[in-house]
Structures are given as structure tokens and as C-alpha cells.
Amino acid sequence: MAAFHGGFHVLGTGRLNISGRSSFYEKKISACRASSPHCGHPMKPKVFLTREIPAPVLAFLREHSELAMNADDRVLSGAEVIAGARGCDALLCNITDPIGAEIMDALPGLRVIANFGVGFNNIDVAAATERKIPVTNTPGVLTEATADIAFALLLASARRLGEGERLVRSRAWTGWNPMQMLGADVTGATLGLIGFGRIGQAMAKRARAFDLTVIYWNRTRLSPAEEQALQVTYRPFDDVVAAADFLSLHVAYNKDTHHLMGEKQFAAMKPTAIVINTARGPVIDEKALVRVLSAKRIGGAGLDVFEREPALEPELYTLPNAVVVPHLGSATIGTRTKMGMLAAKNLLAVCAGQRPPNGVNPQIYS
Ligand code: DGY
Image (tube, rainbow, N blue to C red; front, side):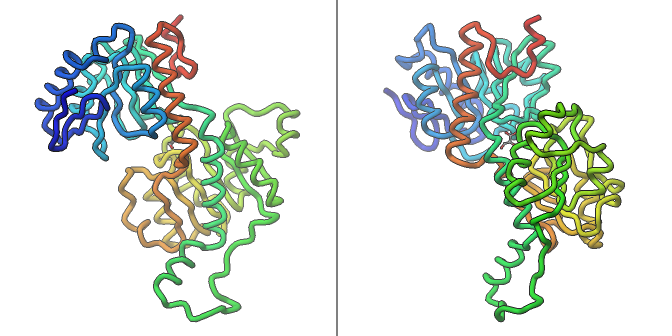
């Protein structure tokens, strides 16, 4: 099999190293499709993958599809996605790839957009629905990992782990001190959950082990039996915000949840309360959050997601009462592998003429 060295495409692995020279790599992709032995396989769908994902998923995709992928460790531009996915049946993208109508129109043969992620606000689903393109996501498999990070942020913020680690690493620590870095008590506190789907519920399960009282708000209230089983109490949104010692956000991001937490909501929180966000950055008005953290009008924040990732509001890089981590919610080997397998199975189902297991726009079938 042919190989193109110098940072480009290696046939056989289906890897495509995209270095911004679209006309060049476009030629390489079409060359691959015309000449590679597996490329002529009539039954295998053509898949373009926008970013490297765990090896077992790549092996699975190579077995079941004609795979081309971006092997560069960076987000592709829209033009690069179009160039890479030209002639493909399926686009396997992720939450950092904005997939809008323009991309869909430039890829008339596209049969499915499979997102590697449970959130799919990066995709213009309405535009896909209009064009009858199924969009899929990866629910369920990242519930526990994401709840782990949310709870880790709760503990880290309450007990000032970020500050403590920075102190030790700075070599400025002078020894145990009865008044040093006193944090908030976790045991017995009230956890408020905004959004109570799979991840919110997994958070409630973890909270039980810490004797937290759990109150929640959700668009749809659970049945009394479900609430009892989970040992949670439903309260209106404003009540949850006002009563929580720890307020953890677990809503999907859409126009209704944009800046759900803003100046007014932060003002209603207890002055000692800590807000945790593992959902999507723009659920919080980050500028408003910076103002309340700087003025110490709330206790702190534990953030895995940001409004303009990977950039943060400048103050967040230094505010001591914010614990910030780089969107790690689903970042375990097992979880990312399961996400990839689910995305692969979704796209293969569509290419085989079936409904995908995790379609987010099932109305296209009606
Ligand atoms: C998702 O899947 O939506 C997460 O944010 C990625 O970890």
C-alpha cells in the first residue's frame, strides 16, 4: 500500500494528517478512495472522523467502514471538515466541531452526523432535520464519569484543594496551622441539583454517601416513588438556588438554558455557597460569575466547562475561590471508548438503513 510521508496520509491506517493544505490532502483522500484495496468495498460506508479517538474504536471502524480521519491533535476548520468528509456517508465529529447548514450543504451525500458526546449543541440539529440527516449522540455511557468529576469539583472547591496544591508546590507552606485554609463542611450540607437527568441522578447517589440533603429542580418532576427511591426533594428553581450550599448544574445547553445562572441567580445564592458546572459553559454568565467570585459574594466555583472554551474569563485563571479543570467530565479511557463505540454503532446503523439507537432528531422518520 502506498504511504505519504512528511506528515500527511498513511493509507491502510486511514489516518489523515491535515496541515491546512486542503487541496493537497483532498487529493490524497480521493486517491485513497480510488486506489486502496478496501476503498472499493461496496458494502462499507465511508466515514470521516474529525479527531483521534481510542484505539479499539478505530479498529472497529476500520473493520466496518472505509475510514479517513484527521490525525492532527487539533480542531479542524469548517472548510477542513468539508474537505475531509467529501464523498463520505458519515461524519463522526465531536463537541468542539461546529456543524452547521453550510457544512451539510457542502456534503450532499452525507447520511448521518454522529457526535462523539452526549451534548450536541455544536450541531445545528434543526438544519440537519430539515435536510433529513439523522444526528446521533452518546448518552448513558458517560453518566458516572461526569458525576465523578462534578463530585470531585464539589469536594475540591469545599476543601480548597486547588489552593492547597498551589501552596505546597510554591514551597511557601510553613506547616500545619489551626486556621490555615479552612474550608466548607460537606457532610450534612444541602446539595441543589439544577437538571435531574442521568448525571444529576448519579450525583444524588454520590451525595447520599456524604449525608447531603439533596433538593432538585428539573423541567419535568419525577414521580413520588422515584423521588423517594433517590431520596431527593423537588423544589422550584429559585428555591433550589437559594437553599443550596452546593449548587450543581446538569442541564443540556440550549436557548432556554443560556445564562441560566446570571447576576440575579448568583445574588440569590447563600454567600457561602459553591456553584459546580460540568454541563456546558454558557449555562453560566461567566462575566457575572467572575464579579461575584471577585467580590466574594458566593463561596466559590468548581468549573469543568467554560463559556468560550478553551479561553476563560481572564480573572478565572487567578481567582483563588475557583477550581478550574479542562472539560474532563467524560475523560476516562473506558468512558471515551464506550462513547466512540456508541457513535460508531449509531453511524453504522444509519448506513445500514436502520434507525440509530441514539438519534436526537427522530422526527425525520415520521
Ligand atoms: C459531552 O459528551 O457532551 C461532554 O461534554 C464531553 O465530555
